[in-house]
Amino acid sequence: MRAIVWTADPERACEAIRAGGLRLTRARRALIEALFRAPGPVSAEQIAAGLDGRAPEADTASVYRNLERLERIGLLRQVFFGDGPRVWALADRIAPAYTVCERCGEREGVGDAQLAPARAALREATGFEASFAHFPVMGLCATCTGRA
Image 1 (tube, rainbow, N blue to C red):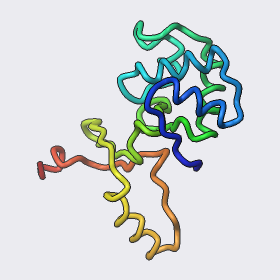
Image 2 (image 1 turned 135 degrees about the horizontal axis):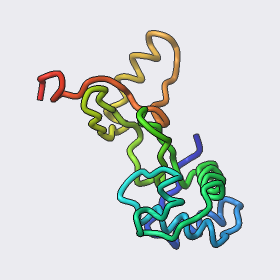
Image 3 (image 1 turned 90 degrees about the vertical axis):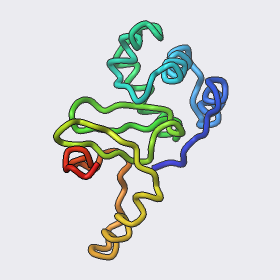
Image 4 (image 1 turned 60 degrees about the horizontal axis):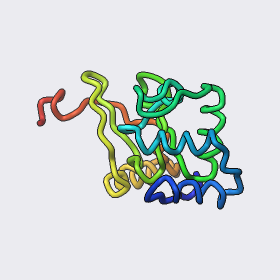
């Protein structure tokens, strides 16, 4: 995974596109502006449909192409929550990993410090270096297990 590109505003994100060796096209600028308007991680289909009026509509194939290119330069990240399409967000505005409750669907962002013990245990047991970036940790939340 590439290093995260930090973006304070859409203009800084557009500068990052150029710095990543890509042209800043109208479609890419519109995509960045849509992601800044999004309430959280969103699917390519939601972006193409205009985010419920928060952004202009766009061609779905073009949105996918640009999402994937912008992920390659570290500007975006995608996550699969296990119950629908992959979703995207600006890399500096999305949690490093997520937990998803299999019973109620509750999603919670998890920080790197919280994941460190799980990574260490897996590394010790198997020698495997785990990444929780694209897929959630599935299980039952504290409410559903009665520990809340």
